[in-house]
Image 1 (tube, rainbow, N blue to C red):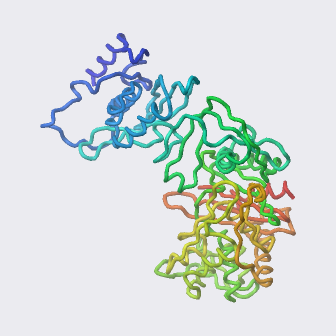
Image 2: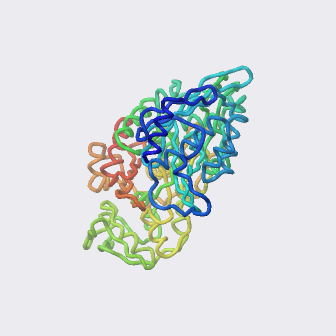
Image 3: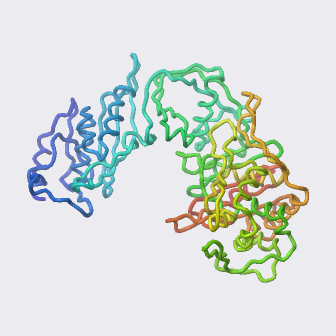
Length: 553
């Protein structure tokens, strides 16, 4: 270690010139901020091939510093092959780094590492974006992680496209040029402009609106640096994203259904909780009045794919009532545990309701009351109910921006039973669960939408059947009782009597606390929210949803 410290001190007094930029070491070898130098490890760090052994164990600070510096220095100097060779995936790294000059038109790249946090090295990127006589400075932050190569334990940069830019995912590219899609000016239902400055969590929504309507809304394309999505990102319904504009295009205009008052309140509410998302709908029409996410990089509210926990019991209850397996005031078993398909299912804290009704089991969210009916159901019963009545799990919603439309796969044995309580393979997001509440309130599934179908003459999804009047009235009574006297009562206090709700908690592997869910309606408003790793839905997502229902009613 002594030799490396002296070497660094000598370099400190003799700065190296890197492509016209002087890079200077700040502090000694133990300092957090360091400069970029050509060359590799010092002599005492090199070994001959004959005596090389596979290194294991945690990376040392020196190894992290050497590997990251080698990569960043080569990248900064435009030595793509050397930079790529300093990663654990030279082919993918070389392809993307080559594109920075060729496709993204980035020049004069300078990289400034910051203090390493273990094996993670954050760094600042500065460059010039230059295209056909236009130029603009570009600056952003990124990070890399150093790992050991499996074959010999050598420290290398763990390659991911996000190393180059945090918005990039596998298969994505950075491209500068005339945008194929003109910008759009999105308006709320009252004609006010929607911007990320006003509504921070709507960035992904604006990206989706541009992708869908940019070419038809009457605008003119500008010149910009953008993320062009690859196959994997498109499969995940991620939209291309503008990172910088060299010349502004002329935007076309797209009017949405968003309520400015509810949207503002939704943004404020989700910011009170980490990883919170919420959606508000109008059941009588399907109009989306608000959507907000805490954590603005991904639209969990529209595109999330999460187990919905006990909020799924709304759909399951409709199935059980339809089949005569449950009725609001009939006796219904709620034991502490119930075994099906080789799995032993539990209630929260192993509670039981002796001699209770289905109303009591629904309001208290008794898992075993639902699992006990699995043996009387076919494997595809829940899937058909979700599709035919609630319009879910068919991947055919057209709301105006990308969405995930819920998934209720056909499963068997224990997994089928778990699906009845919103676990197993069932996946939903707040948009889906707000739609479930809206279907109960109105009695008919109406596909949610953010842009009116008349704008582009698209066809909205429909459900093939509606619930019988008997089932619908019982389902509404279950949700009303839960809002008045069950697990949703505290959050929904003061909102009755024309209301209904259901709470949920969904266990997630490797997560200490479950995701908290809440779906509810009040008059001609329906909403649903999730707080990831938040705990019980009544305590976490419940207050968010209830506040918005109160404001909008």
